[in-house]
Amino acid sequence: MRSYFIRTFGCQMNKHDSERMAGLLEGAGFAPAKSIESADVIVFNTCCVRETADERLYGQVCSLKALKTGGRPDVIIAVGGCVGQRDGASVLKHAPHVDVVFGTHNIHELPSLLEAAERGRPAVSIVGAGESFSSDLPYVREHAWHAWVSIMVGCDNHCAYCVVPSVRGPERSRTVEEIVAEVSHLVADGVVEVTLLGQNVNSYGRDRYGEPRFAALLEAVAATGIRRIRFATSHPKDLSDETIAAMAALPALMPFLHLPVQHGSNRVLAAMNRRYTRETYFQRIAALRAAIPDIALSTDIIVGFPGETEEDFLETLDLVGRVAFDHAFTFIYSPREGTPAASLTETVPREVAQDRFDRLAALVHSLSLASNEREVGAVCECLIEGASRRDAAVLSARTPQNRLVHLPLPDGTSPDSLAGTFRQVRISAAHPWFLSGEFAE
Ligand code: SF4
Image (cartoon, rainbow, N blue to C red; front, side, top):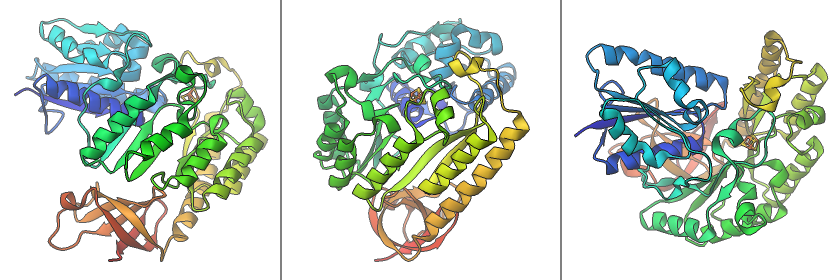
C-alpha cells in the first residue's frame, strides 16, 4: 500500500485541513507513513501568516530535493494551503522538484492532482473562494476523544498586516443544523471535546443569517451532550454580551478565551485597522470576568508594527500588565506581501523591535508563572490527553482553563488507555508554561 506523510504549518484551521487531507488520502488507498523519508507522497500544508513559517516551508521543501535525486525519484511532493493559494505555479520556480500545488479552497482535488502528477507532469490547481466549501470532506482525527469542527471559513476584517482574507476569502458560515449534526455524530463516536473553528467565530452566521448567531450556535452545540466546548478565534470588536452570557451559562463551555488584542496603543490599533480601542478591550475583559470569575485569558501581541513609538509600546506593556493575561503569544511584526501594512515605510529597526519583544516576553513570562502559581493546591477536573510529547512516562492533561498539566503515569497503565478520560487532579507545582499534578482520587 502506498503511504503518505503530511507536514502542517500554522494554525488550528490548517491542522483540521490536514485531517481532511488525511481522510481523502486514506479514501484513495494511502496509509500513513512512519516518517517523511519513507512516504510515497509528502504533503506540505502551509501557512503564510508569518514570515518564519514561510521560510521554514521553502527550506524543508528544498531539502527534499536530495530525496528525489538520491534514489527516490517517484516520491511525490505536494504543496497546499495558504502558500499554495498565494503563490500558485510560482512555487515551482522556487522548488522545481515539487509535483503538485493546490490551494485552501480545493483540498478535495488532492487525490486527482496526485494522479495527474503520477502521469508525469506537475499538477497545479488553485481556485478562488466560493467555488467550493471543504467542511463536508472526510477526515481522520488526530485524537479519538477530540475533534476540530469548522463552523465558518474566511474573514471580512482586513486587518492591515494580515494575509488571511486574501488566501481564505470572505466569511462563509455553515448552517447551525450542519454543525449540530456533525457534533452529534462525534459525540456518538466517543468524542468528549470539540473546538469550533473559524477565523472570526464571533461573527459566525452574519453572512448566512444577516446577523451573528454565535451565542445561539453555542447553545445548540451544548445541547448535543458534548462534555467540553472550546472555540477559536475571537475578535474583540465582535465579542457580544450574548456570547459571554452563553459561555457563563453553559457548563460545557470551558472558562477560557483566546482574545487577540495585538497592541495596547489606540494609534497603532487604528493603523492596524483593528476597529476597537484599548478602552473597549478593557470593557470586554471586565464583562468576561464579571460573568465568568474563573476564566483564563490568552492573547496575541505584535511588537514593531510600522510607526510604533516607545510610548506606543509602553501602552502595550501597560495593557498586558493591567489585564494580567494567563498566557500570551508574542510576535515581532514582519511585512506580508500584498497587505496594506507592507507598503508602510516608517519601519521599526530590528534591534529596537527585538528589545521591545524581549521586555514584553519577560512580562508575559512572569504573568504566566504567577497565574500558574495561583493554581497550586487546587483540585480540578482534567481531561487526559495521552503521553507527554517529551516523556512517555508522563501524562499530559488540560484543566478547564486550558492549562497544561503533567502527571506521573500510574503503574500498570498505558497513556492510550487513559486518553480522553476525565480525572480529578491536584495541582502540586507551577512552572511558567505548565503545571505539575497528581491524581486526587
Ligand atoms: S480578524 Fe484580522 S487578523 Fe484575524 S484573520 Fe481576519 S484579518 Fe486576519
